[in-house]
Length: 370
View 1: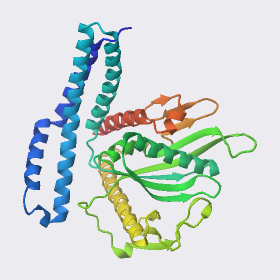
View 2: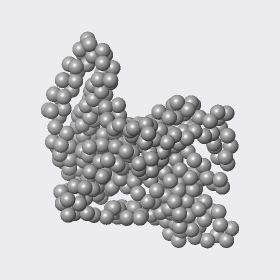
View 3: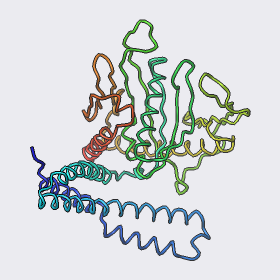
View 4: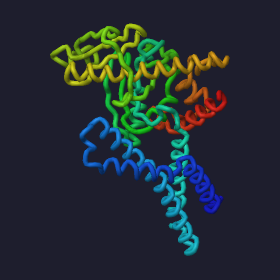
């Protein structure tokens, strides 16, 4: 069936109109002008903390503006390409237009989802922690598979990542790992990945070839920024130092540079060992601890509000996604019903479909709770 370019472009423009309305380009232009005026002030860097905040806000505002206007240009270019191909009845040009349509449709869809990310922390970078759960060595191996999946997803998009801590299991895989994804809206995108993931497969570690079910917990929190305020009394923290280790328990550092930080009132524990010095690991651990406690504080406040309103709902449940490799091939999100029959691609970082469906589901849940 021939592609109805006219209808496809019409739908793209309708979506972009919605995106522009939500983004409010006029207000964004005014914000950029105001921030540019502040950046041009000769005394801006007298207060370095304020200067960093202002320049960061300007960079984000410009990026958001260019993202929307740039997409409008792509739709215009696509329309021009289609018109040229149709006027000259050029099959090769129309084939190129079909490929471009597919790419633009995907980009516009991603931009539309991006406009849905309006939560308090959605614009932040993300800190992801993966922990092996029930399932023994299979769970540890699964944890490492998920870590690779998220790092490959970030790599596909060109997002910078930094592994902050890795605790290796004795036989295979990892007990836990923590890493940052340092790009705006990383938290908004990856927050829907938080929860319990389940893997069903023939265990490569079982000499009888039996099917094994294993579980891994994924936690996603927003990265703390210098402007956030959460004070942690020194007496509330217990800090232990230990020697970093690699796979199989091999020593990596010749000094005890790794840090384990425990927040005594809540029992929250953060470990860091990938920095070169104990001071750096301690600073990284404190930043992640602040992020977790800040999010915990917001969650407690939200829970109190829900209880006062008489509307206490259960969380997502014990499993939010299943990865089945045997007796059939399927990855399915149990909240959104989004699924694919290609687990290999998923474990190689192809999870945009799950993230988009998760964001739309999350927005719908928020609206239903209002």
